[in-house]
Image (cartoon, rainbow over all chains, first blue to last red; front, side):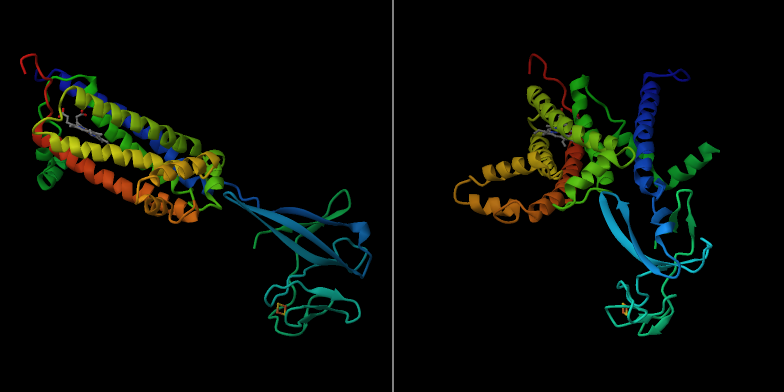
Length: 163
Length: 219
Ligand code: HEM
Ligand code: FES
């Protein structure tokens, strides 16, 4: 028997081969299954339409809001964002888009015409028309949506990033 | 090169002696029916592996169990494959273990000195059925819910102790989050640990006694 390919050797080789095939047929999908969430493109970023340019008169604060849906596995969380647009001149680039999330602890501020300020209902913070802190605990001015554009249809869009 | 590495390892591990004794042992002339124990073992390993992978996404809570399984089926790459193997493998394992037992019975291999092997085998069959019973609830859909309701009710019909057994199985008088959680614990920790232990003793006994040969006419 020595030197030739014995029945034993055949069984061993066949076991190794079949075992390898089964191992690969299971192992490769298993790796894909494990790392799958890391390979999904997150749909967090993108241009979001907020208001028509023609609906925003010069010098007046106009409120807007939009909702983003975050999908994690089988859970969907929708978060609503809101803010104000202020056009400072005819130039569509000359716009200020404020986030109405208070920079203190995140309550939603409201523009009060009589006070000429954004008032936060939670701890009485006051912000100016351009978002500067006038009074109260907030550590910094209201956040701005810096990246925006006006599309061909005349709609103001802002670029939304997660966070 | 390979030979050198092999010899270096072998000198320290000494696995060849194990291999010669455990896998290179003499076998009586048998047939395909003699492979069913190994088939059971193979299925146990496959169920263990696919089960571990399922727990990466499965969530044993009434709020999430159903959705997490839908997600495995439709949202995760190869989720359908992993769950499919585990799902069909479960039924197949029960059938194979049962037929393995039948062959041991038909060839009268349960006789001296293999009575213990047989008794442990009964434990293995019960634990395997327990795996099926506890696993069936985990998807938390209507069928699972009602099957477990009825199954635990049957266990609850035992005289005197019935109500206690029912409550112990369900973790209370009704099917609840507690039921799902304890079925999950049993399914992934307790029953597999029991199976692994008994399989170890089962295999030890098989190697110790060698496999029985088929009874001949004069026996
Ligand atoms: C998880 C379930 C089980 C596993 C993994 C398993 C595994 C094995 C293996 C690998 C063998 C070697 C010979 C053969 O394959 O026929 C064997 C033999 C044996 N099994 Fe099982 N078994 C299981 C369930 C059972 C059950 C339910 C019984 C009976 C109640 C049983 C009784 C026996 C006996 C008596 C032998 C010795 C047969 C002989 O020496 O010819 N086993 N088992
Ligand atoms: S959250 Fe606005 S002032 Fe505290």
